[in-house]
Structure formats: structure tokens, C-alpha cells
Image 1 (cartoon, rainbow, N blue to C red):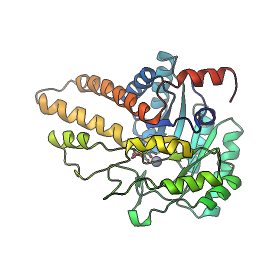
Image 2: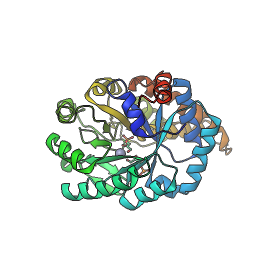
Image 3: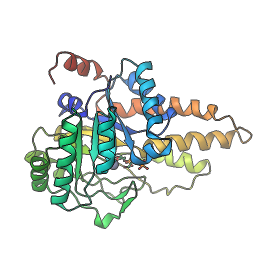
Image 4: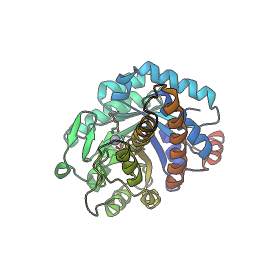
Amino acid sequence: MIVTTSDLFKIAYGKFAIGAYNINNMEQAIGLFEGNLKAEAPFIIQISKGARKYGGAEMLEAIIRAAENRYPDTIFAVHLDHGDEQTAYDCIESGFYSSVMIDASHESFDENVAITRRVVERAHAKGISVEAELGMLGGVEEDIAVDEKHAMLTDPDEAKAFVEQSGCDSLAVAIGTSHGAYKFSGGQGLHFDRIASIQERLPGFPLVMHGSSSVPQDEVLRINGAGGKLDPSAKGVNEDEFAKAVPLGVTKVNIDTDGRLVWTRVHREFFRDHPDGFDLRKPGTIFMDAYAEFIVAKSEKLLSKGQLDLVRAALQHKTV
Ligand code: G3H
Ligand code: 13P
Ligand code: ZN
């Protein structure tokens, strides 16, 4: 069942975080649905502009519709990740997305508010939720690269003013994470003090954590052991910190890179061990199972594992 992110956030706030996973193809979709079904976890499917371009937006939509039919017990939102204004409108008009992100965080505060406000008006008229972003994460997202020294943590007072003026339903905040495999150097980690100050200004308002992959060391070592050349100092978010972020209002956690690492490890190891192989379905099958297992493990760390009944009951009794 497709629901809005706002519906999920009302139920989850302060209790658990919803995993938001980017997908680009059928194998990722099947692993995602299988994993969340097994974990009994609600989830968010994220589609980036790059994913819409890769195989065509209508292909991804057909895959998700087919998965919805095949897995009728799942509860999820379909969300545009890092949308620009025009792509947000395309998704709102498509009748398929239940949530869009408008990312105008690279604009001035006033321009970010104005753009987000316009998207909110069009989305809310159709019952669609809107995520916006304030502050600057490091790393690369879509075609915009932000180096670490230009990354800027979200200002709590600005966050409050932004939410009031823009009318967005959730806010992506910069709290020390960055996109991609190379997030932290040395002992850096999440800025919990900053999350707490934002929550103080915006009690009960859902916060979104982008760049939340954990980039497991053993995954990087396995990829490099099978011919990869990833920087072994690659480091992500400590998964055990999700549980600490949940009571502070972090309700959506974005994960893409970790799934790509699973894909890379499975395929590199498969072709290393089967140099004469060329049947794409063989590593594809291993990947779908491995990705489903990965989702189950993430759900546990996000505290969303086993929450499906609670979500179903809340939706049925319209307590959201
Ligand atoms: O934040 C970016 C996401 O990881 C999506 O990546 O634009 O390469 O699809 P992508
Ligand atoms: P990662 O690169 O850490 O997986 O972050 C993904 C993300 O924030 C998508 O919006
Ligand atoms: Zn992101």
C-alpha cells in the first residue's frame, strides 16, 4: 500500500526511523520489498533524478506497481529524492509519487523558502508530502559537489523560520553527514547537539538525515579483495547512532551508497569466482537475496523492524 511520508512520520516520530532507500532497477526493488516484508518494516522508496533518467521514469513506476501487487502486505511511500522545481512538479502531476523532495539548499534562504513554498502549494493540493533541505551536506549529490570545508550545519533558528515560512512537511538537515562512500575523516560523527537544538525549536517536526550509509569496512575490504580499488579509509555513519537520533526527531534516514556497495561486492566476487560466467541472472539472484538481508539488518538499527502492524492499525483507525 502506498502512503504519504507524512502519514508514516506521524506514527514513527520519536519511536523509530523509516529507512529511505534509493532504487534504480528491478533487482533493487525486489530485494527492497522482500527485505522489508521479512523485517515487517514500513519503508520509503526514493527515486533520484538520475534514477528517472537511467531506465526511464515510467519503467521504475511499472516495477514499483508490479511489486506493490506482488507484495500486498507492504506499506511504503514513493518519494522523489533531491528534486528540482520542475521535476517536483512532474512527479506531483504524475499521480504516482506520494512525496517529493525539493532541494533548493544551494540557493539563498529567501529563494529556498520561495521555491519550497511554490512546490508545497502544488503538492498539498494533491495530498502529497514535501521534504525540503536547509544547510549543506558535504559530498556529491546529483551533479552538485560540495567539499567538506563548504559543508554547513543547519542553523536551528533558521530551521524554525524556514519551516514556518515554507510550509514543508519534513526537513533535511545538515548534521555532519555527507553523501557517498567517503564521509568522515578521523573521529568525526553526527552532531547530536545540533540535532537537539533543532528539535528544541521544532518539537514534533520530522527531521531527515541524508548521507546515512554506514560504508561497512568489511564490505569495502571484500570489494577490494575482488579487484575493487575503493579507498580503505572510507567511513560512514555508525549504525548504532540511529537509535540515539530517533528521540531527537530524526524520522527518515536516507541510504543509497550501502546498497550500491552490496551490489558491487556481489558482482565483483561472483565474476572473480566464475571468470567464465556471463549469465547475469546468477549474480542478480545472489544480489536480491543479499540486498533483502541488508534491509532486514538496517531495519533493526533504525528500530523500524516489526513496526508494520502498528502502522497498519494506525492507518486503519485513521489516528494519523
Ligand atoms: O543523494 C544522492 C543519492 O545517493 C542519489 O544518487 O543521483 O546518483 O541517483 P544519484
Ligand atoms: P548515502 O550516500 O550516504 O547513501 O546517502 C544517500 C542519500 O542521502 C540520498 O538522498
Ligand atoms: Zn541525499
